[in-house]
Image 1: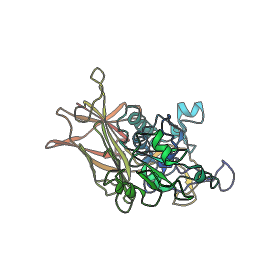
Image 2: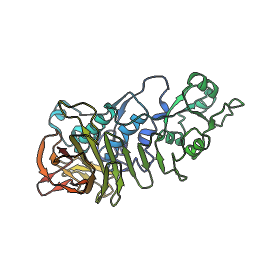
Image 3: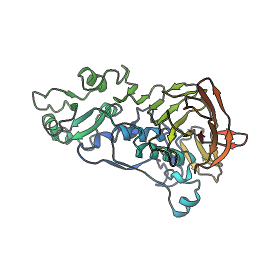
Image 4: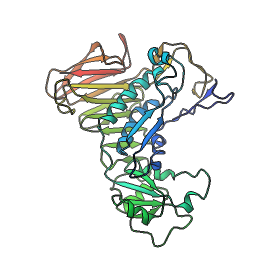
Length: 388
């Protein structure tokens, strides 16, 4: 997302960036990958990245593991960790891909890896396939899947099948429906549960009984997964994932979001916020937020090296990387948590998980309140550990 452009010389400064939000674009990343999956075969994403210095890149910490899990993909590879051995060990400030040089990327990648690999988020219940008929697929060079079919992947598992709709139903008996293009005209009659690709496709699939009612709003700016765990609003640029093992939110300044056991309010700067149950050594695996003894909280805003220079305040043309140290964008939020019974305490932790300092965790009735702040008088904070 926001791959650099090179307006003067290839792979050399100055570097151009669009500075767009993936949430505002209906999670184009990763949705544009979803149709390329062939049902019945393993699927791996061998390169993905939300590139620095895109100011919205913390969205990727939630979008990628959430939708990869919903799609039931098999593997993901973040490109890349580092450009060299030295960068991998000692970090740095340069490079638009290397997460070893980005505090936001380092924490976000670890959250995403945990959520995806332990299966916190359920795969979609329904599957919808695009019948890529040869007459349509080869009608133009570089033909893309329709944008509105990509959006179906925010609700259900999607993929493609090379052939006619009837062949897709015959070879993929577990699919809920088939989408295909109207031009050139396909075989007639079409099998039941087959619809033509069109704008507002999710609503059409609802009317046909292929997707559950309420999967999208009439404006096609809000999408809810058929599992009920994931909700994206492109208009509000907010995101919510609620599972037994964790609750995740992308909140904008002033927004308030709520899950089952966590509520987010008092947001002063857009941020990705995760609350995750952690297994305790010696205890049974599979801890949930309802019975956890340890909980991880992350709060990701933005970070840039000191001295990084842009041509303008819009950050669209990067002239130099700077020298560091990394500076965090100031942001605050308040978490209200329904925790299991116990004497809970909270600590700010570093990127290795080591406790740095105890922070206030106040009790209010049957809930606890944790005030998040990326910048505080005693240092910077991107993550917290809660324990009882």
